[in-house]
Image (cartoon, rainbow, N blue to C red; front, top):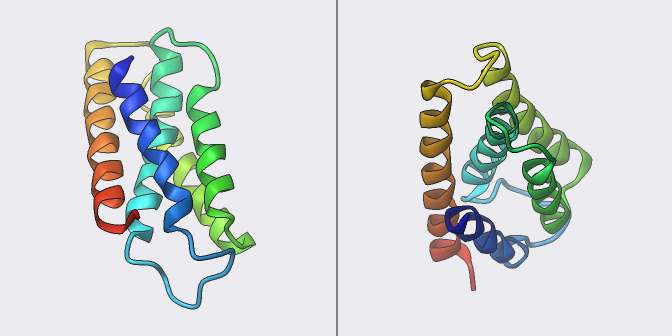
Length: 124
């Protein structure tokens, strides 16, 4: 559970990254945030598949969107990234397997790394 908390406590930095609802140019951390959204979607599917029932990961995605206050087009990109992550595993796994739990571990580590990098480079 501590790794989960680490990833998403760092998300508290996200509001400091946002310069407002609309941006003239894509922020340098935009790709990392979209990848994080994709990871959240993957974890939402995989963790539920492997016995963690609930909407924790969807809730984290909602917090990310809320913190960023994106315009409609950018909001759609966040949602598409989340859904891509979810669907990428939905088509591959019907039950929890050792491979699925390994994917959970990999995505947890990648999410943690991404949030640290974004917070370290762009947070206040």
